[in-house]
Image (cartoon, rainbow, N blue to C red; front, side):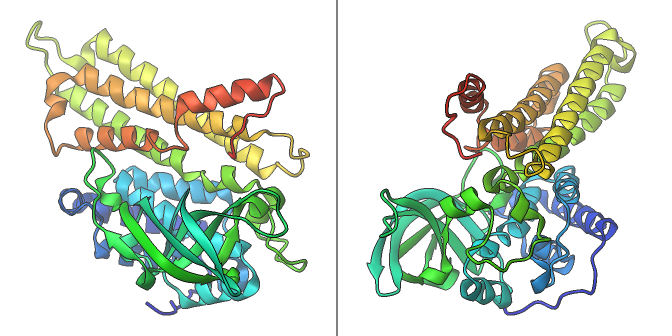
Length: 393
């Protein structure tokens, strides 16, 4: 795909306007994306044209280095129109973060090539030492957006000479060196194109192997002279990396509330002939769902404040607390989606409707391993009592 021309300056207003365009296009193409199990190249091109795919690059590479609040709003804006598109509009710029923690040579190679990046963190692959690098092999599922990516990061555990135990790493492979198996046939998030990828003895130099433990522990790249203004060098790696998931849920839940109100205003129940907008039943349901939504928004604000103040606060916020706050937001949004469906009744079940699509996609966001509520509260409970929550964020 080659290098992409970078615009002079991208403002927050332009970013959000671009997100609006991406969302509207993805919504117009939603049925096609459901059938094809991927968003279209039209949407991908718009992600690039709006410069959103480059949002999280350091200034050295032309990135605007936007704040976390604007990034969250961008994801939420797209999700208000189509959650599958929001999934990739979040992950593509987010994955631009990965080279920022590599040695300079690997960082320059990947960023200057200009292509999109996808990844799978699960350390299910194998690595065999080969000269100055490693031969990578394995099969990874859930490689979101791999059909349009030039680079694919895959999780492996590597035993380095300077470590006692194997270390979880993310070698970043050229997409031309891997095989993609189009097996994405799911209940929701179908447009994310999260297919399977296979590597067979693919050589990766050390300059393109991200040592995740070190990135998470230090929050810095492996060099003394680095960009002190880069916002992601001052927050915990994984809690910041996972910021988009609750914002997708918030954007989707906001749309569900709007759809519920519209459908309820038009609805007359056959059993009593009462217009639902005039009924205390639906008035109460909408009021409760809306106040629950405001609570989720407030939790998101707290999450971002904890990230932004992490170093100022002495890095005291535990990883399990970030995990619990994030999944609570997603749980509230999921509960709103389910309650809206059960209140609207059978009319909301028809395939292809806006409500049906958004409910499926929100539930699917909640199934991601970083969104599992029961896991998060178990970890947070340990942390509150002074034990290790045993989670990375």
